[in-house]
Image (cartoon, rainbow, N blue to C red; front, side, top):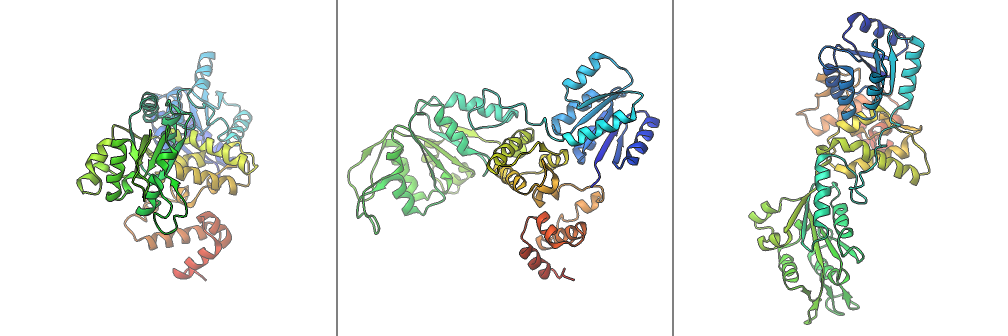
Length: 449
C-alpha cells in the first residue's frame, strides 16, 4: 500500500509542483489549500504524514498542527516555510512538528525527511505518561477522566457506599480498587463478587456463607464474602443482576451490619464498606420493579460514572501504548509504536466494548505483527472496515447501512478476497477468523469457485 501524504499550501503553483514530485517518488498525494481544510481532511481520512506550509490565509500551519496532533498524536507533520526564524522553528517543534523545512525546498532533504517521518511512525506517541494525580492502575487525561480522578480522591477516604456506573469494559473494577486503596481500609482485603455470574442460591451462599449440611454438598462450614471482607471492602459487580429476593437479604445485612450463614440462627457482626457497580440504569430498574428502591438509595450514597471510551478518544493513544508495552513484554517482543494509519483507525472506532475491546485488539496485534510497528493490517477486521482507503468512495463505505447482517458479511468476505487476490489464508487473517470458518462462510454464501 502506498503511503498517503497530505500536502497543505495556499500557493497553488507550489502545491502542484510538490504533488508531482511526491507522486514521482511513489507516494499517494492529496492536497488542501488551508489549515482548516487540512484538519477536516485528517478527521475524514487516514494519512501517513502531513507536509504543511506555515503562513496561510485562514488557519496557519502551526494552528493546524496543534489541531491535527490533538486528533492523532501519532501523525508526523513536517512544517515548511519561506520565513526562516528561530522563534518559528521552536514554535513548530513545541507544537509537535516532526521536522522543519526551509523554502525553497531542498528536495533531497524533503525526501529524507519524509522517509524518516514514515519510518518514525508512532515512536513518540504515548510519552506524556500519567499525571501524578491519576490513581494507580488508571490511565487517562481527558477532562471526563480528570473529573473522575478528582472524585475518587475526594470519596476514597470516606466510609460512604459508592455506586460505580458505566458500560461494560470501561474499567469499573479499577475504580473500585482505586477507592479501596485510597481509603483507610487500603491495608485490608478488597473482595470481589460478580453478581451476574452465580445462580441465586449460590450467590447467597457466596455472600453470607453456610453451615455444614445447610444444603446438599455443604460438607463444611464456610465463611461468606462479607466475613472475608471484614475490615475491608466488598466490591459487588453487576449489582443490577441480583435477584429481587436476595436484594432484601443484602439490604438487611447493610442496615444491621451483620450477616447470617445459611443454616445458622446466629448472626455475625461485620464491618464492610460496599462498592457496587452496574452497566444498567438502576433508576429504570427500580421503576420496573426489578430493583428495590430502598436498596438503590442505600448503595447510591455517592455515584461515580466511568465514561465510555468513545467519549474520551484523546486517551486512546495513551491506553494503546500502555497495552502495547504490556503485551510486548509478555510475548517477549519489541515494538516502536503504531503507524499513523493504525492509530487513525483506532481513533475512528466507536469501541462498543470500551477499554476491554481496545486491550484485546492491541494484544491480538502484538501477537500477529511481523515487524516493529503495529500497522493497520495487524488490527481486527472490524477496525479496518472504518478505513475507506484510496480505492473506495463514500458510497461504497456506506453500502452496508440498512442491509442484513448476512449481506454485510458476504460483502466483507467478497471485498477482502478481492483485495488479497483470493488467497484464503490471508483473507482469513485479515478478517480475524480461522481458514475453516472462512471456507464454511464461503460455501454458505456461494462464493467458492
